[in-house]
Length: 219
Ligand SMILES: Cc1cc2nc3c(=O)[nH]c(=O)nc-3n(C[C@H](O)[C@H](O)[C@H](O)COP(=O)(O)O)c2cc1C
Image (cartoon, rainbow, N blue to C red; front, side, top):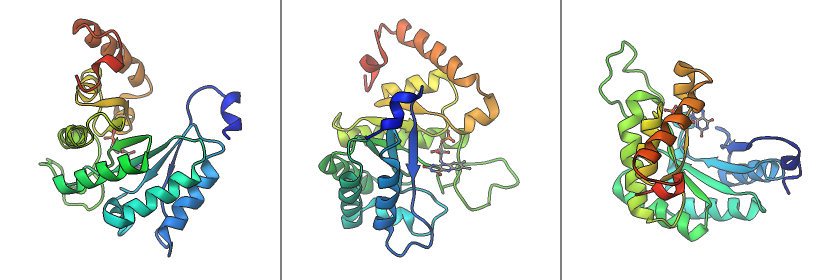
């Protein structure tokens, strides 16, 4: 497995969703995971796109357990992450935590865009669809902390949603994230952003006496 990985630099993650018109969504995810596993360093199964009607229903109950079992069987030796929405109540958080632990997924990604609407001073505030970036930041940070409480340290957490600085990356790590991802902020800040985040994060870790990122996770 992952024959290609040895021949290139960097880390290749592949994000797998289901087609809008799939009649058997689990089979659709399994087909994606099976195709991605030989070439990816990790696979994320995304059950939290707000653009595929009914997709977020996979985030609970027997549907989630069935999906995770099928995808874990298909992933071979490639790490498998589960990406969920920030639009979850406490019961759903607990259910996802239990399902992820039971299925032994390698990490939980918190999270996708929100369909909620924090106060927005924008003409397009009433548009439907997923909201990303700065207005998502507080919700994403809160849901990450909720997921950390629900999982203990049993599953590594990956934080995403409104992260645009070393200070915010540090806050997520302290709240339980082992890794952070940036998306929207790259649009506004450009490709120099990761370097600035790493530099500022290193300074914050040193200020507070942490010898490594790992030492600060959930601290
Ligand atoms: C235009 C757009 C397309 C996206 N497509 C995907 C996708 O295909 N799969 C996925 O898991 N998340 C997708 N996302 C969600 C982002 O990966 C990320 O989780 C979310 O935007 C929150 O992070 P951010 O505030 O840094 O953008 C998309 C977001 C946007 C704005």
